Length: 233
Image (cartoon, rainbow, N blue to C red; front, side, top):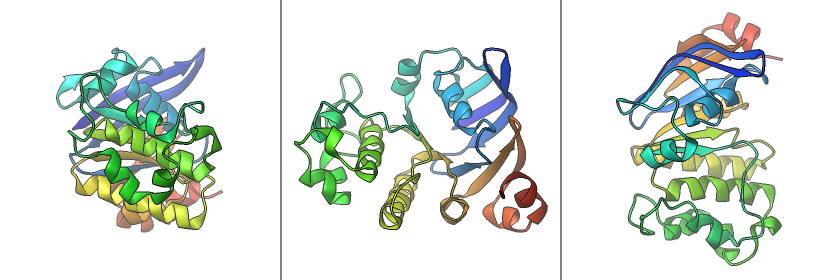
């Protein structure tokens, strides 16, 4: 579904991504691991067109590198950024409505607003209050749900469990598994190794702007050298 080949990206003169290669199949959860600052978030932004990419990004066989972010979104890629971009002056319900694609009717895709409220009762209880008063965990749920309502075929989720309570972390993990069950591919950027290793089908480890390991969670567990050099603090 997603095929990234020799992806480079720059911030000014800083060469952040230095030839990233990765693939994601339909319904697959792929974890992108690594220490802070190695280029994981930049990889998502380059795929999404928020950072100018050099190289190839093919989505469902179509080259999307060089397209605008909204064009890529309309093709079926959803992006949940790390900074929880909500619209604080709008209600929870209004934020969710903004996730719909142009011409898309609410409930016509794999996810409806009612689905979201069934999974996250807190959002139902706060459907008509301003999103600014939601807790950090509720804002994270809102951002993920708003992306899913647009019915993407692939979602990129950046650090979804950062700063959340253990109970909320488990809810996020459950949602990620449900996303995969519905046939949606997922690229998960996650700092918590245990969560990523539990739910991912495959993992990539990044270091210095490149992929330094690719394999299954079990294969990574067997590579103490990789974990020690590239993951452990």
